Length: 418
Image 1: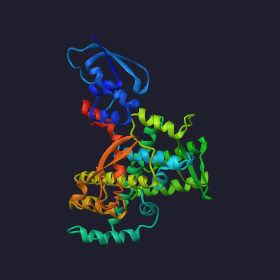
Image 2 (image 1 turned 30 degrees about the horizontal axis):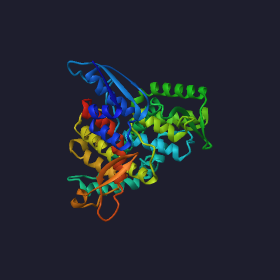
Image 3 (image 1 turned 135 degrees about the vertical axis):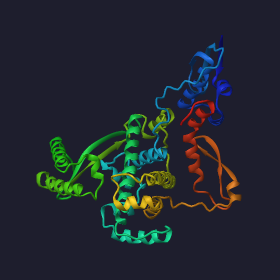
Image 4 (image 1 turned 180 degrees about the vertical axis):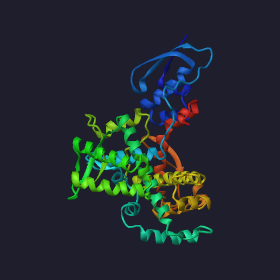
């Protein structure tokens, strides 16, 4: 059996609600939308072929199946390991490169998260500067907000843990995004080893310098009875001894104050131009992102990322609070967990260091019920509005829904993103 469809007929027969809406508004489907549609076709036909381009495509289906087949999805580890706020982070990285004319020098992960605006200067300042004034203010808040809290000098251990863990998670997420964007050929990413000299010059290290640093580090780990993971326990006396000697040898032998991994990112050159190249990647890549952020949208997206990331961070803290037998915990941390004060402190630390969004909605329930229609990339969406002024989140909601549309179409037609 054979059946011939125009693209409009195929969308009407096999398209999801999102695909039908997209076709209605644009008169066509993107390459990614068309590929998803064909997966639905494969469930009822043994084979298909198409000719023509764009909205004039003609699709010929052959071999009607007697029983609907299971949906074919060739992705491996479908939906596994997706990062919290991945869409936002993808978009912020790409937009940052565009805003800087695709000319960004290699930077450390800490510098990147500062430049992108997802880490507040207050947090970075506490990480590298004096923490006494921060601790004093935090203890005042702990005393007001946490029942049965007893002030202790060792609260600095909790502050240290927060700074180390939160920055580590943020930087880890960013580096994962670099790798995913590079794998999807949206950017080129290269990791380099850089150092800061005793004259405060930052430069790329030579292969011999990198080898010498690794040798020094390896010998000192053995001498102090440590492994690489132990170095996160900054208050451990062996770690302090390691760091003191390592810094001394780094300066004496190589003239360096410190070294770090620097990340170089650039959008590939294309005869299409940057915008058209990214349009094509956005339509055909499994990786969700947008490159059409105005300054206002970027600021909103930063706030959205902060909320998602801090919520996840607090969830992890609640999980750690339950583990009161972790041998690597310092005494103060262990005590706070037993008293069930660890997660509450973590929440206050997130607020104090502005890791949570400062954006608040002032809409009333009646205003939230009102809807307005806006258009993004040729697709119309209904979003909430405020009756007396423009809702700053409205168009961002549409941008986010555009990115989710393909995932929703998979859910509706039988696939899943777990």
